[in-house]
Image: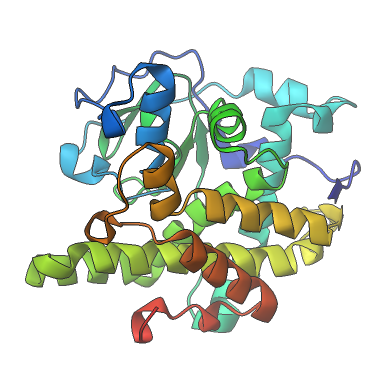
Length: 304
C-alpha cells in the first residue's frame, strides 16, 4: 500500500477528543473468557466485541450526549510534510478515502445520497450518543449520533494480541465501521433491530448477518480505494497490493467468533456468535472485494 503524499488530509472528517476526559467508562464489567486472568484475557474477551454495534453499547444506555473535540493539534500535524508518517493522519486519510467512495457509490448503487460521518479519536473513555464507553469495547459505530469511535491504541492490541500486524488491517477496521454507517443510512440496521425484537431466538444470527454485510462493504471499498481522491482530485492511494488485501483477509479471519473463542481458551459455541466465523468473515470481505459491488453484499437474502 502506498499513500499519495500530495493528497490533502481532511481533518474536518475527524473529531479529536483525545485527552478530553470523556465522561467515564460504561460501568459494565468486561468478562475474562475461559478463566484467563490479566490484561491478555481482558483484551481477548473484549475483542469478541470488535467492530460496531455487537457489544451491547446501544442497550447500555439511551443517550448521554457527547463533548466536542479540539482538532487544532491534529490539523497542524496533518498539514506537515511528514503527515503520512503519523498514525492519526494516516487514519484520517483512510477515513477520507472511505467516505469519498461512498459519496459516489451509495447514490449509484442504492439510489440514496450519502451523508458523511465523522470519526472520533478518543483516549481511554468517551461520551457518545449511545452512552459512555471506554477503550475496551474496541472501535464502534453509534447509530444514535451517526459517529464512528476509535481509540487508536486498539491497533497495537490487534497486532500484539491477535497477530493482525499488517498496516491494511487499519483501513479494513475503519471501512467496516463505515459499512455500519451505510447500513444505518439505508435503514438496514433499524430493520435488523426490529427483526431481533420480533424473533429474539434468532437475534444472534441477525447480528452476524449485519456484521458480515459490513465486512463485505469494506471489501467493496478496498476494491475501489485506488479510485478515491481528495477534494482537489489528488488520488489518495497510489497503490494497493495483493499483500495488503491479504492483510485485511488475515485480520478478518483472526477476529472471527470461533477464532476469538478458541484463543480465549473457551470452547467454540456457535450459539454465542454475533459477528461470524473466521471463514464467513473472510468469505464476505472477499466477496465485496472480488465484485467491487455493494449490491453483492446481501447477507440477509439467503444462507450464509
